[in-house]
Image 1 (cartoon, rainbow, N blue to C red):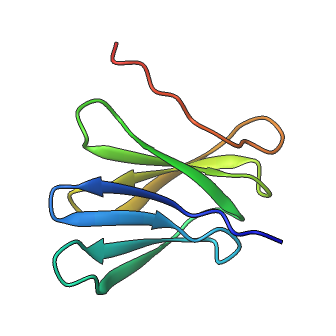
Image 2 (cartoon, rainbow, N blue to C red):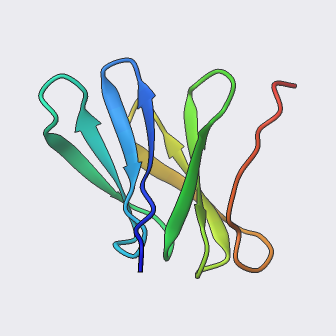
Length: 94
C-alpha cells in the first residue's frame, strides 16, 4: 500500500497531513524539525490555505468533517461536518 504525503509551505513553515495519525505536522522549513502536531479529524487527506493564508483547511475522510486551523496561533479553531469521505478541498478567492 502506497503512502500519500500532502504538504503545504507557508513562509518558514510547512504543514504536512499525516493521514492515519489524525494530525497535521508543523515543520520548520529551515531546520526541518517538527515544531508542533495539530490534532484534526480522522484520516486527514488534503490541505488548502484560504486566499489570505490566515486559515488552513484539512479534509478528514473517515470522520466526515473538515478542520479549520488558525495559521497565526497554530490552533484548530473549528471542525465542520460535511458529506461522506471528504477527499479534497478547493477554495475560491471570492
